[in-house]
Image (cartoon, rainbow, N blue to C red; front, side, top):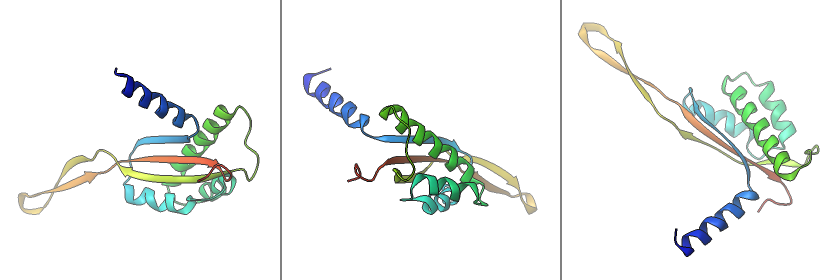
Length: 133
């Protein structure tokens, strides 16, 4: 590895120390359904977001709640202290499409209809209001 590339890698590592995130990959639901849940909690304080997700009727909210708890634990691990009430906020949350399984379904008159079983990846960032840019 060259000197310039090493310096860039070290700078990237330092920047990653101040970012508190969690990622959930290959969730077997469509990205469109997951984005509805992500939009519900975007920008919220984490305790309020946990309450919203717990009482939501959408199936995808259980996955996002699990992800949020993981992101909070990551923040507590890196800062070596417990998060206080009203301190942490969801700064960014986004949903990307994952792999799509393609299946065939029998249809009338010898045809076959294509079924697309979609999956998604969710990434969530938490931080305090004072550190938010």
